[in-house]
Length: 193
Image (cartoon, rainbow, N blue to C red; front, side, top):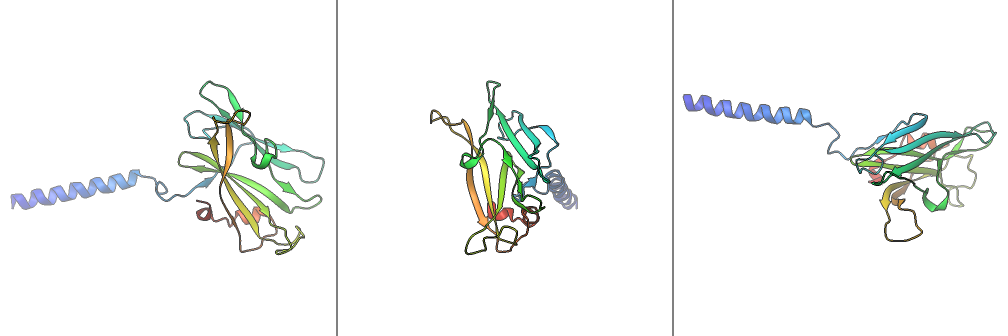
């Protein structure tokens, strides 16, 4: 009987240990899920590239004297020497991520979103895909192309930014959306993993 009680006690303690361990692990730790980041207006301190050093992410408005100013994001990576490096936006379009709404309209045809991942952050850009195949009028509901960009380091090529955004995945929606904000509500992050 004594051995039976010891065996039962061992099994019970082992099961309690496993249950306690599972309770300590966050539900999304192994699921590959990523969460959108809601930035505060102004300066945000985040470890964007996952190196353990807080970087600067500036959330700002570009008021271009229209009814819908552009929402922007600029990122500065703090290097190991304590200096800040600005990260250019992909495709040589400057240093600031920006959305774009049509003048005198609430239709947003391009947009971006910062996402948290296990070790740092990434950006997803979206734009309405106007073409002969899908339709050329951006005021119409169109498919949206989502592109994921991850931060990479380039310490090999002189004259090139130390940090840059590398296109890692992209997909085009089958559904049509009037606005990129609407499309972000239905984004498939799995398609961008």
